[in-house]
Image (cartoon, rainbow, N blue to C red; front, side, top):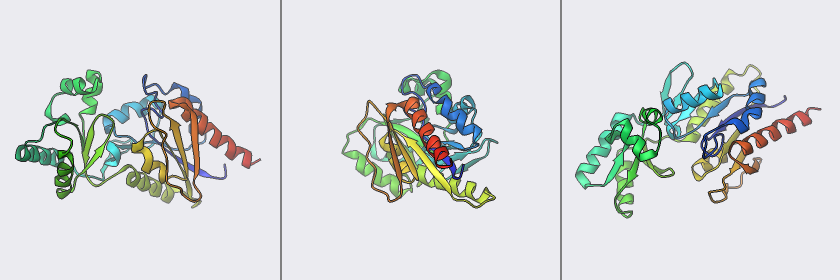
Length: 266
């Protein structure tokens, strides 16, 4: 292939089926990417422990981005933290809750069983979800108008508040794009031919918008349960919208990209 690619992908609703968490429908594209030695980087809000289990199931040996860009986890077990460390985050949260009497429940407040109760995860999965390195999900149980004050107080401690699905995520000044760019630069430096990498990103939700906007090829995977995702216009970016959801859409888009590249070489 004339181009050198690197792939960054969201998990739930993108590479994994939103309901079954299966990746089976994307296996053909995953096999092709492995054959072509194109790295696939998982980029998710999940913890390194959660992503490690998924990467093992997918037979991926690339680095992975965890906790919304706060951690880069490498296959050898090394971790690079780009945000604040977990004990600091929990200390600030406990301090603000005591001072302001905020009502919220964080993962650090309970056991794996409590996390399972909050999330619906199995006890084993809840244990992995609780092995946090640099971010804390919390369930906001207070008035909505207090959120802005809470956000500003977190910012004074160098922390950010980001919306996930059901949970808010408290983390340092890191994000998926910053972590993605770190890995792109790292892979680029290791390339003997010096050819620039073409970045492909795939996602299905609003929290993937920045990652998609930063890619050379952005694939918006159809989300039947969400609103259509719009990206700011970017000169030179190729934008693909799948008609199929989840891993089936992921598979179709990736095979299309690879086939188009192969056709251009004929």
